Image 1 (cartoon, rainbow, N blue to C red):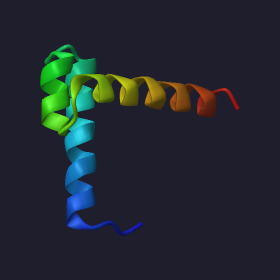
Image 2: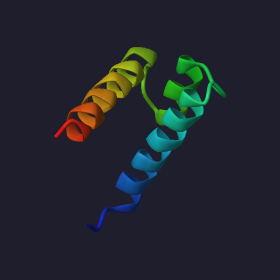
Image 3: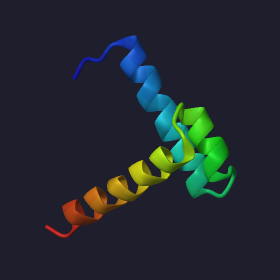
Length: 59
């Protein structure tokens, strides 16, 4: 799958922010800032991703 440089950058920043938050290295607010999102949007994205991962593993 080919993606543009901006898409890659956006996904990489989100992945980095999510991992740092998961490891308790950053607050949700700082992780959101790194990802370019507001805190609520970042947290909602994390919840939705966790649910998707869980539902995919249950099959």
